[in-house]
Image (cartoon, rainbow, N blue to C red):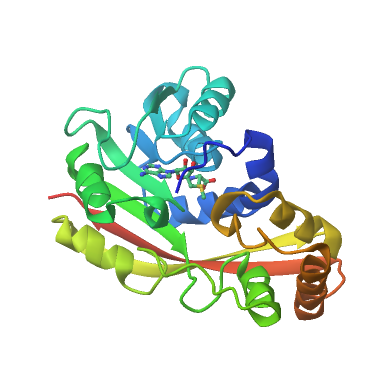
Length: 253
Ligand SMILES: C[S@@+](CC[C@H](N)C(=O)[O-])C[C@H]1O[C@@H](n2cnc3c(N)ncnc32)[C@H](O)[C@@H]1O
């Protein structure tokens, strides 16, 4: 899926509010060294880049994304970081360059997740770490799972088909098949506060990210009915909502 039409600010208000705290727990789970060089694959607007920069320093962090406006936004935030345009399946970096290569909420958007895992291993030095996480959509624990449930209950529109990384074991298998050693899995949970229901709902109407298209083609009454069902499911607020991701880390042989 392409994020080309998604403005950086719109992304931050939608998924960034969840991916920023998730980046902190992903880095903790990955058990990275205190020094070295790190790559953020599918950096978006730089939620994970920021955590890596804090740990390793701007000159020791690289980031890559296929969406030009995200590359621009991340490069503008981190002037000394090496921010490039490209995909996980064909990373524009030499072999064995990084001590750690991470991908937050990216595997489910790849056209070839196995190639993405192999590329993460290729650019990481032997003994280095690869790690990734994707929302647990198998058990409806993503941040927008209540939205998808409301759409499904009110209309006949089914949720998007399962994608790589969204089920237990997916990321483990991808890293193991790419040759990683000591591959471990965990669940990463974050909690995000929303002042009220409208603040939670509004980004879903923008047609961006993974839920883009879910409301497309429906008339105002149907959209209002979906909104009302979602409000019944999560409440009026203030809201404190949790979301859980599957995560895996492995050592490069
Ligand atoms: C949900 S966003 C996550 C962004 C960021 N990692 C974060 O956690 O906020 C998914 C990102 O994956 C990027 N992406 C989509 N397909 C990709 C691919 N094949 N390789 C690398 N990145 C990809 C998108 O452009 C987008 O920035």
